Image (cartoon, rainbow, N blue to C red; front, side):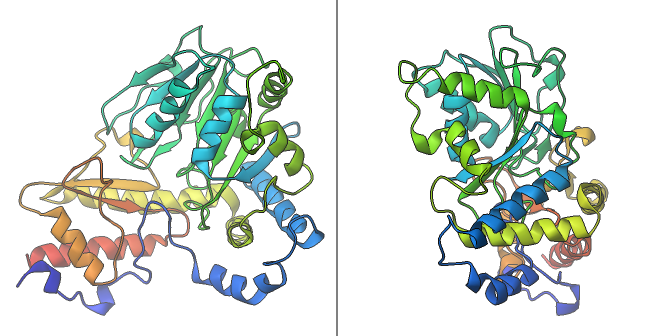
Length: 382
C-alpha cells in the first residue's frame, strides 16, 4: 500500500497537527479571543487609545518576559524581520558589519549590508549548514557591529547570546545584533548581552507576520541617534526604515504606519499566556522537554539521526532530523500531511532527506511525543 494511503489511527495523532517553523501554530484560544474581543479594536484608528493600549500591552509584555532593564527600549515597526535588516543596515551599522553565517537567514542580513551602497564590505564568518561559528571567537576591529541569529530555523542550529569583551558600552563600540525571529520566547537569553534583540511575532509568539519588535540597549539607541543626526548631509534613510522614527512612535505606544491589529492582538494574547505560565523560564522548560524527546527519539532510531551533530547547538525550537536511504522523507511528510500532520518538510534550499519540526512554546510537548509515535507507525508499515 503506498504511504500516502496510510491512515494513522486517531488515538495516535497529536491534538494539534501543525509543526511549521514559520509561521507557527496559533493557539485556538487566541483566535477565539480575537473573534470575541478584537471587534472593538480592529477597524479603528491606530492613533486612538484602544489601539495604543494594545501596543502598550505588547511592549510591557515583552519587557516583563525578557526582564528588560531600565534604559532599554522596546521598539516595534511595520514590515517584519526583512524590513528590520534593512533598517539595521541604515541605522545601526556605522560602516562595517561582522556576520556569523550558518544558514539561510543568518546569511540574508549579510547580503543586506553587502549591497548597501553606504557601507563597506562586511566581514562574514561562515560554516557549513548544521554547524555555527563561535561568537566569542569572532573578532575584527574594523567592524562596528557583530550580528548572528539566536536560532537558524533553516538548519535547526542555535547559537547563544553572549557578549564578547569590549562590546556595547557606547555608540562607538561594537554592537551585538541578534536575529531572534525563530528563537525569541523559546530559548534562554540574558537580554543585556545584546544591543538589538529583534524578532517577528509569527513563530515563538504564535501570532501573524508584518511586524518587527526590537529590544534596544542604550548604546544602540545612541548609535541610532548619531547616525540619524547626520541627515540631511549624511546617508539617506527612508522614514519607513528609520529606527529613530520607530523609536519615537513606540514610546508613544504607536507605529509609524497603520499596523496589523490582529497581529498585535494575537501577540498580546500569547504574551499574557506565556507570562501566566511562568514566563521565559517556563517556556524554555517547555521547549526543552519537546526537543529532548525529539533528539532522544532520533538518536535511538535505526533510520534517523539529528542533523546537527553538536548536541549543544541543537535548537530547542526547530529540530532537523535526517533519515537514511531506507526512508523517503518526502513521502513520509506527504503521508503525515494527508493525516492532518503538516509542515514538517525540510527547508526547501537545504535539500536533505529530513524532516524539520517546530517546537515553539505554543506546541504542547505531548504533541511532539505523539508526532514521533505517528512517524514510527508509518515507517513500520512502509
